Length: 116
Image 1: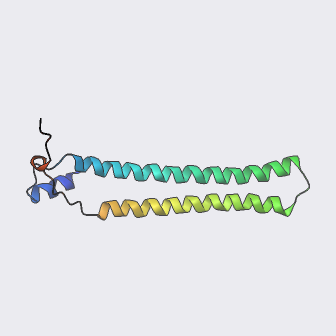
Image 2 (image 1 turned 60 degrees about the vertical axis):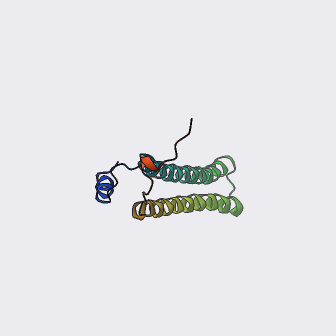
């Protein structure tokens, strides 16, 4: 739990806040990082596939055709575009998470209790 959030909670008179809120914030940050890594992984695979097509065609078939080059460059450019989109999306979500005001209105004593 960040020191800033604790100070904000104490200033709002919420010493007895729900411990689920910091966990939810941490889960959201981790989910954002996982999504970014998925975009990076996908972009690397696309770029590597384009490189493999270009290399395999040059190595196994010395006579070049324009179609193979176009396909290889398309995969490489798509990989770079995926990477750029992943970086932009990650930074936007990170800023949104940071700037979103967390409305902590649920105190531990307000939580619904199971009746036995």
